[in-house]
Length: 398
Image 1: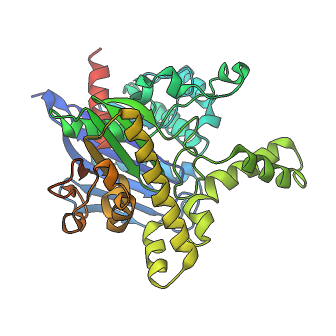
Image 2 (image 1 turned 90 degrees about the horizontal axis):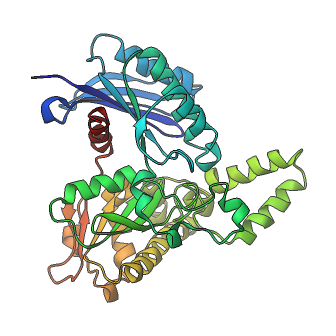
């Protein structure tokens, strides 16, 4: 029996998640998982759990930057306590307009993806840093980039094309879509009975929704960057361009340069808006729900805006699909926030979406629609790391 340990590296704007799977001889067994969270803070978290959930590492180190954070991961992986990886898969939010296929990583490919940092400014810098480090500390081990945009490549030109002058379209400005590895994992779990007309709502600190026909992406909410689409934890989602111009003019009045003004605007739309911006309190749904219980009107408005926006997207995607067989909730909020699911679905009875309150009173995988609901509503946790492993094994065989 041949062994094939595959290391998965999944970096976020303030975290690095990782896992190792045994993928030899068709196996897909997770051996351990871990995370470094709170990069840029004085008291972060670093933990590793084995397959049974037992914590092997549990620390609260200072994490001033990504270099310190990734060194913790690298040192642990080289400690001899864990199997050396035979291959490494990296989640990449966006490879830009020229890197659209999952493939083996080379230094020139990293440079190419880094040149499109503006397409995912919160995620690309740390992802390319980790790729370079992985090539160095695991010499000879094949590394592969697995793109969030890959799943959305089946969208039509009408869905992808932005209503802008051709000169900007030629620069790669179009709808790409994100959370694709999560969506792909939902299709994987629904096999062999993938519904013809499916909507999946990936709801977390970053939120998006996709219309899927026969397992292929028809349309999705996020656009050029993950900032577009649905209001999420700290991002605006889609917004009147005039609002951006208004804010930019206010910023430009005191900014030292155009670049500084653009950076400040990016901070506003990506880090200070969304649930955090509307509530003035938090981007964490759990904290907002607690604030609502104490009568906080701004927290109530933020959550109402979130649920209202998602319901609108569901309605538009039902029209685009010309029907709906199943609605799936996934992601941290989608899996765990019972009230959000109920509030999103409350006004969608005309579309055939009827929740059963008792069935919905659950966290984790479940069917939550009523017996008489024409549309099946499910909660399915994503399996992103497993999807990355599957792609790595496929690419190793090519």
